[in-house]
Image (tube, rainbow, N blue to C red; front, side, top):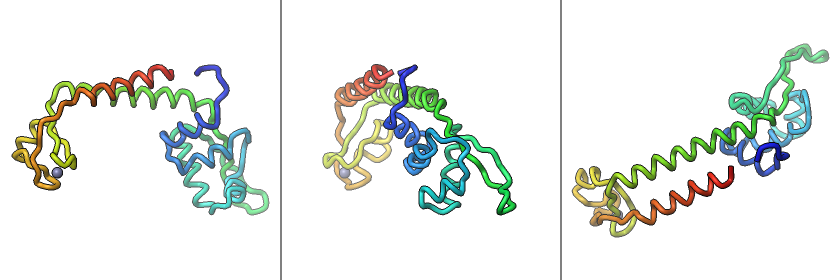
Length: 168
Ligand SMILES: [Zn+2]
């Protein structure tokens, strides 16, 4: 991945995960531009200045945008001028992947170390401790909770982990 030109898809995915899908458009809008006034962002994107600011600060909080406050000569007040920090996309993507891998590893460990019980109607799934607590009765429908073979779940989780590792 490193050294490759970033695709719009990669940028969109990282922004969606790190900031939220609502911030994707403003990031892509800023891409390739420099020092863009928040008033122009709002204008071009046809959103209110408050909305534009809110999205821009969300990017800023995740280190994906920076700004400078400048005094507007005509209006006499301070407005922010923004740059998209595209160079931070890959490091953030790496960090997100590490977090995802860690989550999956913990999930696999939990699956391997516990027995799970599933409702006959498949509306809930709990570990052994919880199953005892609820007397093997489904908290949703009152149906019987049966032990579940979680071999397939562990397989799927391992596949997910491999998929992430092979995309690195
Ligand atoms: Zn049930």
